[in-house]
Length: 364
Image 1 (cartoon, helix red, strand yellow):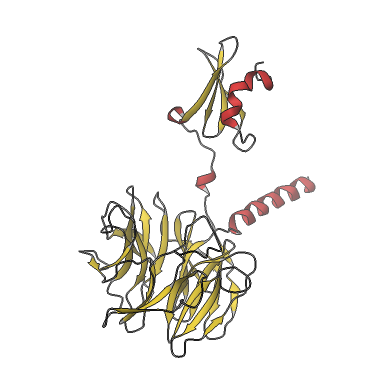
Image 2 (cartoon, rainbow, N blue to C red; image 1 turned 180 degrees about the vertical axis):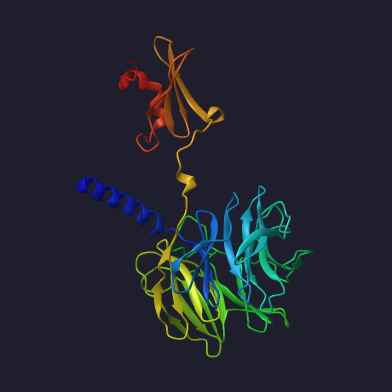
Protein backbone atom coordinates (compact mmCIF):
# COMPACT_ATOMS: atom_id res chain seq x y z
CA UNK A 1 0.00 0.00 0.00
CA UNK A 2 2.85 2.39 0.90
CA UNK A 3 4.57 1.52 -2.38
CA UNK A 4 1.43 2.29 -4.41
CA UNK A 5 0.93 5.55 -2.49
CA UNK A 6 4.53 6.56 -3.18
CA UNK A 7 4.09 5.90 -6.90
CA UNK A 8 0.93 8.02 -6.96
CA UNK A 9 2.69 10.87 -5.17
CA UNK A 10 5.64 10.68 -7.56
CA UNK A 11 3.32 10.74 -10.58
CA UNK A 12 1.43 13.69 -9.14
CA UNK A 13 4.63 15.65 -8.45
CA UNK A 14 6.04 14.80 -11.86
CA UNK A 15 2.89 16.14 -13.47
CA UNK A 16 3.22 19.36 -11.50
CA UNK A 17 6.86 19.71 -12.53
CA UNK A 18 5.99 19.08 -16.15
CA UNK A 19 3.43 21.83 -15.93
CA UNK A 20 5.58 24.35 -14.06
CA UNK A 21 8.95 23.89 -15.74
CA UNK A 22 7.74 25.29 -19.02
CA UNK A 23 9.78 26.62 -21.92
CA UNK A 24 9.17 28.34 -25.22
CA UNK A 25 8.75 31.76 -23.64
CA UNK A 26 8.66 34.37 -26.39
CA UNK A 27 8.70 38.12 -27.11
CA UNK A 28 9.66 39.36 -23.62
CA UNK A 29 9.84 42.93 -22.37
CA UNK A 30 11.00 44.27 -19.03
CA UNK A 31 9.98 47.19 -16.81
CA UNK A 32 11.62 48.42 -13.63
CA UNK A 33 10.30 45.43 -11.70
CA UNK A 34 8.52 42.95 -13.99
CA UNK A 35 8.81 40.92 -17.19
CA UNK A 36 5.97 40.37 -19.65
CA UNK A 37 6.15 37.59 -22.22
CA UNK A 38 4.09 35.35 -24.48
CA UNK A 39 3.56 31.69 -23.63
CA UNK A 40 1.04 29.35 -25.30
CA UNK A 41 -0.26 32.39 -27.23
CA UNK A 42 -1.22 34.23 -24.03
CA UNK A 43 0.48 37.07 -22.16
CA UNK A 44 2.05 36.50 -18.76
CA UNK A 45 3.76 38.73 -16.20
CA UNK A 46 6.43 37.68 -13.71
CA UNK A 47 8.77 39.51 -11.34
CA UNK A 48 12.28 40.24 -12.66
CA UNK A 49 13.59 37.90 -9.99
CA UNK A 50 11.50 35.06 -11.43
CA UNK A 51 8.95 32.88 -9.69
CA UNK A 52 5.28 32.27 -10.38
CA UNK A 53 3.94 34.03 -13.47
CA UNK A 54 0.34 35.15 -13.80
CA UNK A 55 -1.70 35.40 -16.98
CA UNK A 56 -3.07 38.78 -18.09
CA UNK A 57 -4.78 37.62 -21.30
CA UNK A 58 -6.55 34.46 -22.38
CA UNK A 59 -8.77 35.17 -25.42
CA UNK A 60 -8.54 32.80 -28.40
CA UNK A 61 -5.90 33.95 -30.84
CA UNK A 62 -2.19 34.66 -30.80
CA UNK A 63 -0.70 37.45 -28.71
CA UNK A 64 2.84 38.67 -29.28
CA UNK A 65 5.29 41.58 -28.91
CA UNK A 66 4.03 42.91 -25.55
CA UNK A 67 5.63 46.21 -24.56
CA UNK A 68 5.43 47.96 -21.19
CA UNK A 69 4.45 51.60 -21.08
CA UNK A 70 7.22 53.81 -19.60
CA UNK A 71 5.45 53.85 -16.22
CA UNK A 72 5.09 50.05 -16.28
CA UNK A 73 1.33 50.12 -15.73
CA UNK A 74 0.10 49.22 -19.23
CA UNK A 75 1.07 46.73 -21.91
CA UNK A 76 0.66 47.28 -25.64
CA UNK A 77 0.70 44.13 -27.75
CA UNK A 78 -0.22 42.61 -31.07
CA UNK A 79 -3.04 40.06 -31.18
CA UNK A 80 -5.06 38.15 -33.73
CA UNK A 81 -8.57 38.10 -32.28
CA UNK A 82 -10.61 38.97 -35.36
CA UNK A 83 -8.80 37.38 -38.30
CA UNK A 84 -5.79 39.69 -38.53
CA UNK A 85 -3.11 41.15 -36.24
CA UNK A 86 -3.98 44.46 -34.60
CA UNK A 87 -2.61 46.66 -31.82
CA UNK A 88 -4.21 46.24 -28.40
CA UNK A 89 -3.61 47.63 -24.93
CA UNK A 90 -4.30 46.24 -21.48
CA UNK A 91 -3.08 46.78 -17.91
CA UNK A 92 -0.51 44.62 -16.14
CA UNK A 93 -3.39 43.26 -14.07
CA UNK A 94 -5.29 42.10 -17.15
CA UNK A 95 -8.84 43.05 -18.05
CA UNK A 96 -10.62 43.53 -21.35
CA UNK A 97 -8.04 44.40 -24.05
CA UNK A 98 -8.65 47.70 -25.85
CA UNK A 99 -8.36 47.43 -29.62
CA UNK A 100 -6.50 50.38 -31.14
CA UNK A 101 -6.05 49.62 -34.86
CA UNK A 102 -8.47 48.30 -37.46
CA UNK A 103 -6.35 47.77 -40.55
CA UNK A 104 -7.18 44.58 -42.46
CA UNK A 105 -3.56 43.39 -42.37
CA UNK A 106 -0.83 43.13 -39.76
CA UNK A 107 -0.07 45.90 -37.27
CA UNK A 108 2.92 44.90 -35.09
CA UNK A 109 3.74 46.68 -31.85
CA UNK A 110 7.32 48.00 -31.71
CA UNK A 111 7.57 50.25 -28.63
CA UNK A 112 6.12 53.22 -26.78
CA UNK A 113 7.24 56.79 -27.25
CA UNK A 114 9.46 57.92 -24.34
CA UNK A 115 6.73 60.17 -22.92
CA UNK A 116 4.23 57.31 -22.90
CA UNK A 117 1.69 59.30 -24.94
CA UNK A 118 1.77 57.09 -28.04
CA UNK A 119 2.45 53.52 -29.13
CA UNK A 120 4.84 52.88 -32.02
CA UNK A 121 3.87 50.11 -34.44
CA UNK A 122 4.93 48.76 -37.83
CA UNK A 123 2.40 48.28 -40.61
CA UNK A 124 2.28 47.66 -44.36
CA UNK A 125 -0.98 49.56 -44.76
CA UNK A 126 0.50 52.08 -47.24
CA UNK A 127 3.26 50.05 -48.85
CA UNK A 128 1.28 48.53 -51.72
CA UNK A 129 0.24 44.90 -51.23
CA UNK A 130 2.03 45.03 -47.84
CA UNK A 131 5.43 44.56 -49.47
CA UNK A 132 7.23 46.28 -46.58
CA UNK A 133 6.48 47.98 -43.28
CA UNK A 134 6.51 51.59 -42.16
CA UNK A 135 6.22 53.16 -38.71
CA UNK A 136 3.11 54.74 -37.20
CA UNK A 137 2.12 55.97 -33.77
CA UNK A 138 -1.28 55.83 -32.11
CA UNK A 139 -2.69 57.09 -28.82
CA UNK A 140 -3.16 54.42 -26.09
CA UNK A 141 -6.89 55.09 -26.16
CA UNK A 142 -7.13 54.85 -29.96
CA UNK A 143 -7.83 57.36 -32.69
CA UNK A 144 -6.12 58.09 -36.00
CA UNK A 145 -2.63 56.73 -36.59
CA UNK A 146 0.20 59.13 -37.42
CA UNK A 147 2.77 58.07 -40.00
CA UNK A 148 6.46 58.69 -39.29
CA UNK A 149 8.68 60.18 -42.05
CA UNK A 150 10.36 56.86 -42.88
CA UNK A 151 10.14 55.03 -46.18
CA UNK A 152 10.87 51.65 -44.57
CA UNK A 153 10.83 50.48 -40.95
CA UNK A 154 10.74 47.16 -39.08
CA UNK A 155 12.11 47.51 -35.53
CA UNK A 156 13.31 50.55 -33.62
CA UNK A 157 13.93 52.35 -30.35
CA UNK A 158 13.65 56.05 -29.46
CA UNK A 159 16.42 58.12 -27.94
CA UNK A 160 15.56 59.24 -24.37
CA UNK A 161 14.46 62.69 -25.57
CA UNK A 162 12.52 61.30 -28.54
CA UNK A 163 14.42 63.33 -31.12
CA UNK A 164 16.15 60.36 -32.73
CA UNK A 165 15.38 56.76 -33.50
CA UNK A 166 17.62 53.71 -33.77
CA UNK A 167 15.97 51.77 -36.56
CA UNK A 168 16.18 48.68 -38.73
CA UNK A 169 14.77 49.21 -42.23
CA UNK A 170 14.78 45.50 -43.14
CA UNK A 171 14.89 42.39 -40.98
CA UNK A 172 15.71 38.69 -41.05
CA UNK A 173 13.44 38.00 -38.07
CA UNK A 174 11.06 35.09 -38.79
CA UNK A 175 13.13 34.10 -41.85
CA UNK A 176 14.04 30.44 -42.40
CA UNK A 177 17.77 30.97 -42.85
CA UNK A 178 20.68 31.99 -40.64
CA UNK A 179 24.19 33.46 -41.07
CA UNK A 180 22.99 35.39 -44.08
CA UNK A 181 25.53 37.79 -45.59
CA UNK A 182 23.68 39.05 -48.66
CA UNK A 183 22.33 42.37 -49.82
CA UNK A 184 19.26 42.42 -47.61
CA UNK A 185 21.14 41.93 -44.34
CA UNK A 186 19.66 43.99 -41.51
CA UNK A 187 21.58 47.19 -40.63
CA UNK A 188 20.99 49.63 -37.79
CA UNK A 189 20.57 53.31 -38.60
CA UNK A 190 20.31 56.38 -36.39
CA UNK A 191 17.56 58.62 -37.75
CA UNK A 192 17.32 62.27 -36.71
CA UNK A 193 13.78 63.70 -36.79
CA UNK A 194 15.07 67.29 -36.80
CA UNK A 195 17.20 66.96 -39.93
CA UNK A 196 15.49 63.92 -41.53
CA UNK A 197 18.91 62.33 -41.99
CA UNK A 198 20.20 58.92 -40.99
CA UNK A 199 23.56 57.27 -40.26
CA UNK A 200 24.34 53.58 -40.77
CA UNK A 201 26.19 52.31 -37.69
CA UNK A 202 26.46 48.79 -39.13
CA UNK A 203 28.34 49.78 -42.27
CA UNK A 204 31.56 48.10 -41.13
CA UNK A 205 30.17 44.53 -41.22
CA UNK A 206 28.24 42.22 -43.54
CA UNK A 207 26.70 40.46 -40.53
CA UNK A 208 23.10 40.94 -39.52
CA UNK A 209 22.43 43.47 -36.73
CA UNK A 210 18.91 43.78 -35.41
CA UNK A 211 16.56 44.92 -32.64
CA UNK A 212 18.26 48.17 -31.59
CA UNK A 213 17.60 49.29 -28.01
CA UNK A 214 18.54 52.85 -27.06
CA UNK A 215 19.54 53.10 -23.39
CA UNK A 216 21.40 56.20 -22.21
CA UNK A 217 24.38 56.87 -24.47
CA UNK A 218 24.46 53.39 -25.98
CA UNK A 219 22.51 51.42 -28.54
CA UNK A 220 22.23 47.75 -27.67
CA UNK A 221 21.47 45.20 -30.36
CA UNK A 222 21.97 41.58 -31.43
CA UNK A 223 24.52 40.58 -34.06
CA UNK A 224 26.19 37.45 -35.39
CA UNK A 225 29.39 39.32 -36.28
CA UNK A 226 31.31 37.53 -33.48
CA UNK A 227 33.44 34.42 -33.85
CA UNK A 228 30.58 32.34 -32.43
CA UNK A 229 28.48 33.02 -35.55
CA UNK A 230 25.45 33.32 -33.31
CA UNK A 231 23.19 36.25 -32.53
CA UNK A 232 24.68 37.65 -29.33
CA UNK A 233 24.11 40.88 -27.44
CA UNK A 234 26.34 43.84 -28.35
CA UNK A 235 26.53 47.54 -27.49
CA UNK A 236 27.45 50.58 -29.57
CA UNK A 237 28.80 53.70 -27.87
CA UNK A 238 27.21 56.73 -29.53
CA UNK A 239 30.00 59.01 -28.33
CA UNK A 240 33.05 57.25 -29.79
CA UNK A 241 31.54 54.61 -32.11
CA UNK A 242 33.10 51.66 -30.26
CA UNK A 243 31.41 48.28 -30.03
CA UNK A 244 31.46 45.69 -27.26
CA UNK A 245 30.26 42.10 -27.22
CA UNK A 246 28.24 41.35 -24.08
CA UNK A 247 27.19 37.69 -24.42
CA UNK A 248 28.98 34.74 -25.97
CA UNK A 249 26.43 32.04 -26.77
CA UNK A 250 27.66 29.29 -29.07
CA UNK A 251 24.49 27.17 -29.29
CA UNK A 252 21.26 29.13 -29.84
CA UNK A 253 20.77 32.66 -31.09
CA UNK A 254 19.39 35.42 -28.92
CA UNK A 255 15.95 36.37 -30.21
CA UNK A 256 13.57 39.30 -29.73
CA UNK A 257 15.42 41.34 -27.09
CA UNK A 258 13.85 44.37 -25.44
CA UNK A 259 15.18 46.97 -23.01
CA UNK A 260 13.87 48.42 -19.78
CA UNK A 261 15.18 51.15 -17.49
CA UNK A 262 18.03 48.99 -16.15
CA UNK A 263 17.94 45.68 -17.99
CA UNK A 264 17.73 43.94 -21.34
CA UNK A 265 15.53 40.88 -21.58
CA UNK A 266 15.63 38.31 -24.37
CA UNK A 267 14.75 34.75 -25.29
CA UNK A 268 17.45 32.15 -25.87
CA UNK A 269 16.93 28.43 -26.25
CA UNK A 270 13.26 28.79 -25.31
CA UNK A 271 13.96 30.52 -21.99
CA UNK A 272 14.08 34.12 -20.85
CA UNK A 273 17.35 35.76 -19.86
CA UNK A 274 17.93 39.07 -18.13
CA UNK A 275 21.04 41.19 -18.71
CA UNK A 276 21.71 43.91 -16.16
CA UNK A 277 23.16 46.92 -17.97
CA UNK A 278 25.09 48.39 -15.03
CA UNK A 279 26.72 45.19 -13.73
CA UNK A 280 26.88 43.17 -16.95
CA UNK A 281 25.37 40.23 -15.08
CA UNK A 282 23.46 37.88 -17.37
CA UNK A 283 21.17 35.18 -15.97
CA UNK A 284 18.34 32.89 -16.95
CA UNK A 285 15.10 33.84 -15.22
CA UNK A 286 13.45 30.94 -13.39
CA UNK A 287 9.76 31.13 -14.31
CA UNK A 288 7.00 28.83 -13.10
CA UNK A 289 3.83 28.48 -15.13
CA UNK A 290 0.57 27.12 -13.71
CA UNK A 291 -1.92 26.46 -16.50
CA UNK A 292 -4.76 24.09 -17.27
CA UNK A 293 -3.04 23.07 -20.54
CA UNK A 294 -6.35 23.09 -22.37
CA UNK A 295 -4.57 23.14 -25.73
CA UNK A 296 -3.31 19.58 -25.22
CA UNK A 297 -6.54 18.17 -23.75
CA UNK A 298 -8.05 15.25 -25.65
CA UNK A 299 -11.03 16.37 -27.66
CA UNK A 300 -13.27 15.29 -30.52
CA UNK A 301 -12.67 16.99 -33.86
CA UNK A 302 -14.88 17.01 -36.96
CA UNK A 303 -12.39 16.32 -39.79
CA UNK A 304 -14.91 15.97 -42.61
CA UNK A 305 -13.57 19.05 -44.38
CA UNK A 306 -9.93 18.03 -43.83
CA UNK A 307 -9.85 14.75 -45.81
CA UNK A 308 -6.95 14.65 -48.30
CA UNK A 309 -6.72 11.03 -49.52
CA UNK A 310 -8.99 7.99 -49.69
CA UNK A 311 -8.70 4.35 -50.81
CA UNK A 312 -11.42 1.67 -51.03
CA UNK A 313 -10.76 -1.85 -49.68
CA UNK A 314 -10.73 -4.76 -52.19
CA UNK A 315 -14.11 -6.05 -50.97
CA UNK A 316 -15.65 -2.59 -51.01
CA UNK A 317 -16.81 -2.82 -47.41
CA UNK A 318 -14.44 -0.23 -45.96
CA UNK A 319 -12.44 2.82 -46.99
CA UNK A 320 -9.18 4.33 -45.77
CA UNK A 321 -9.08 8.09 -45.33
CA UNK A 322 -6.37 10.53 -44.29
CA UNK A 323 -7.22 13.59 -42.23
CA UNK A 324 -4.96 15.86 -40.18
CA UNK A 325 -2.07 13.45 -40.68
CA UNK A 326 -3.96 10.45 -39.29
CA UNK A 327 -5.30 7.39 -41.17
CA UNK A 328 -8.80 6.09 -40.42
CA UNK A 329 -10.71 3.00 -41.54
CA UNK A 330 -14.40 3.73 -42.08
CA UNK A 331 -17.32 1.40 -42.95
CA UNK A 332 -19.09 1.73 -46.29
CA UNK A 333 -22.48 1.81 -44.57
CA UNK A 334 -22.55 0.79 -40.89
CA UNK A 335 -19.81 -0.28 -38.49
CA UNK A 336 -16.95 1.00 -36.40
CA UNK A 337 -14.36 3.68 -37.17
CA UNK A 338 -10.77 2.77 -36.38
CA UNK A 339 -7.60 4.86 -36.45
CA UNK A 340 -4.63 2.84 -37.70
CA UNK A 341 -1.76 5.29 -37.76
CA UNK A 342 -1.29 8.69 -36.21
CA UNK A 343 0.82 11.54 -37.48
CA UNK A 344 3.50 10.54 -34.97
CA UNK A 345 3.73 6.98 -36.34
CA UNK A 346 3.57 7.44 -40.11
CA UNK A 347 5.32 10.28 -41.89
CA UNK A 348 4.30 9.17 -45.40
CA UNK A 349 0.57 8.99 -44.87
CA UNK A 350 -0.36 10.53 -48.21
CA UNK A 351 1.45 7.97 -50.42
CA UNK A 352 0.86 5.19 -47.91
CA UNK A 353 -2.88 5.10 -48.48
CA UNK A 354 -2.80 3.80 -52.05
CA UNK A 355 -1.05 0.56 -51.21
CA UNK A 356 -2.09 0.43 -47.56
CA UNK A 357 -4.57 -2.42 -47.89
CA UNK A 358 -2.09 -4.76 -49.54
CA UNK A 359 1.25 -4.00 -47.91
CA UNK A 360 0.25 -3.77 -44.27
CA UNK A 361 -2.66 -6.17 -43.93
CA UNK A 362 -5.07 -3.58 -42.64
CA UNK A 363 -8.13 -5.62 -43.62
CA UNK A 364 -9.11 -7.84 -40.73
